[in-house]
Image 1 (cartoon, helix red, strand yellow):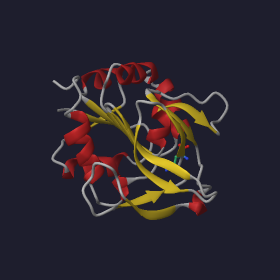
Image 2: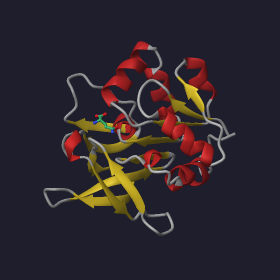
Image 3: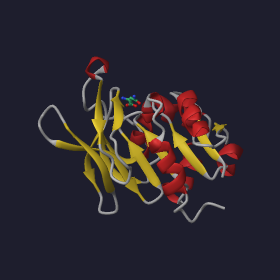
Image 4: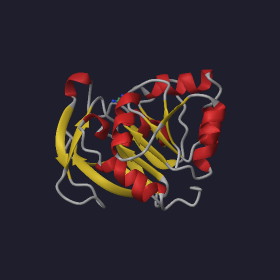
Length: 202
Ligand code: GLN
């Protein structure tokens, strides 16, 4: 299975390490032929507006979007989650996403860089113990469509329960960054559960 990491901006290297520790040899993708050749894709954390802008500049934005709509397994962390969301609150003017995940996400929902935090999260489908989750200018999910399964929630500063990890078929997304902690269970779950259950894998 050929797993690509979209290598335009963000924490590409950290996802590489996590995937390698899961026994996968990831490839950096930024050209159309590379996007065509992969069986699964990881969208890193970083800055969703920059990644979208660069994907448009490189002429691969529509191709990525099409492959996701066609069932390419994808995992997005933080900015990657925003890029997968069908709807974005607090987007910049004209901000586009690849879409495919039937959620409304709010950018920078937990606040600014100084409001970044860590917490222990129970994730549905993962064995205990909890996952140490790192949130950096993180989005939360405000709305989920009927096909979206919520895997983890946190209580936001306003006292509401917010989804921060979701799955919809072959799409997995987290508001937080497992690639920064050395705990690779989310990546392993993506490789072993999400990708394997997808019919698009050769
Ligand atoms: N706030 C960033 C964005 O809008 C995401 C931050 C992150 O990936 N750590 O893309």
